[in-house]
Image (cartoon, rainbow, N blue to C red):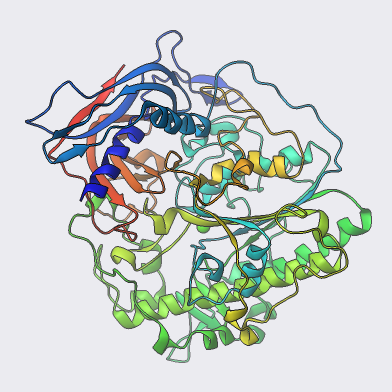
Length: 634
Ligand SMILES: [Ca+2]
């Protein structure tokens, strides 16, 4: 209990930050709008959360804010001075916290936050000549990989990459759904700054004319190329994947992608259906191929081309699987006999789960095989035999994806490009596989926000290879898992929004400047700082002061048909979530989609989960009887 209380106390300090309420003024700006803080009188709100008993409080403990700066729309940069005294308050025992340690934690937060004040220095263009970049973006891949400790999934090629990389085990997306997450990490800004919480706006006209990660490389003389799903297609990338701003060449999309949602899955009745579970005979599907196979082929062709031209390149390859439908070569089912497939360790909806936190997995329900199950809305559950089928198909889709990654990396070797190419492997967000009765993404839980994140930097994360192959293709059907290589793990919480600055630094380009507060009018800056300094962090180093932030919108307190993906105009609640190595805390508060303001006085629900004792986040510890310092306007 004492440990639990200490952690809760740590949260008091940590959550005593940010969450801004900023007065907004819409001003026309290049066809879009500008969000501004009224000069001289920034209005901020912050959460000061305390577990003091309501009836037994005293003034002995206090936290004093000595400086505060507003930035973005919900991240704050704050410098704190705190004095905390030993004592017992209600059920909470406080330990003496040395000021030095406290300041260290706060400094750590200071180093992590999004933006800064003052003049920004825009890096000068430099000639290319640094490292190339291969950015592999996987769709809806949680950390179900051998290199992340998963004993079920067979991912030998990704694990091989991991063994020569630095991998982050606590990396989180800023919103657990495709378009908002991708626009966030490709622009280096949080969803609160891209103002994209759904799929229905293009940031350059809706929020600000922000430069993107590939655009930055293009403007530094790189040949920038997009294969498959990099930007989310449609309005959110201007129906062009942001071409020509971001890309030297028109982005490539595999021709067979148009069949993904068609009736190509053979059912038990012998007919073709648009199913969720869709193992296929590739030779029998339209065009005789699948999208990710085509993307690998195109990516290899582009690598051959840049090799021949000897040009510096930034190649982003976006793989579709394991996104639904689970449409994959049927032979991969052999790797996962159904009798060996287990259910989630916690397949039931926890009693203390606030309903606003629950996502009703509506996308799954639309598939023909799921419709036939007549599952009740919104909670289900899905029949256990079908839960096993989903998990089996998700794993098989990962192994299929793994073979494509293996072929791509093997080609990089063959072309002798791997010794000068930074390889970054990420997913846009995670996916619930039945944990707490939930499926798909659309939430603030770890299973939906946590992503694989690894960086291979030649000569840094592995010895420079000369003639020896670095990434030999490994056949998952003849792979011996006991041969798995050790990996270099970093457990510091990090965010995808940091990719822009991190990849620029790894490629030896100038790191883009930190964003000012706010940054709607600034074309080039990054809200996430480079995480390269964490590459050499030892396991013993204290990372308790570090945090990753995510958010998720809801249209209502109870699950309804659009709870998974509400349109902007229908958003009424925003769930702001912070994850440290010790805990996840989420506050669901009122939200105005016209002014883009969160109202922290309008609290709908709160969640607090401790990582060590509750890794699956089933036991919401937040106690409404806890004394609240409240959401104090300053
Ligand atoms: Ca996705």
